[in-house]
Picture (tube, rainbow, N blue to C red):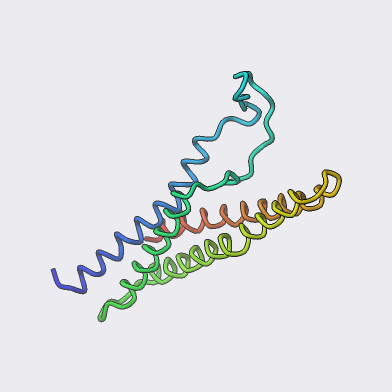
Length: 166
């Protein structure tokens, strides 16, 4: 196997692993989520009514956040390897997949660098105020989280489409 062929295969593996994280984490969260209205009270163990969750609204653990960044790095390295191999003629579907991967990573950066700090800021602001002044800040926080949820869902769809093109 020649070096360009090896690099192309390595790029496909890296892109596949990266997309697997972007698809697997949301699927694991969706499948691990309880049915709407079936939350348990930790103290009594009794069922209680729960508010419906927004797509991927739960806070990310440190490990899941790192996994997404590692996956984004794998995607970028895979796309760079695929496009830098001299003499490789990329099919139109690979070009489209590369564009989708770029958009996916851009959405991740926007979510992590803009949406999450904004929601955290609104949450911090509401903690320093009296109860009657917290409502506007909590509404802004909830709106930011809902926007982040929509962005995560769109990223999930992009990852599925990129995997289908791969």
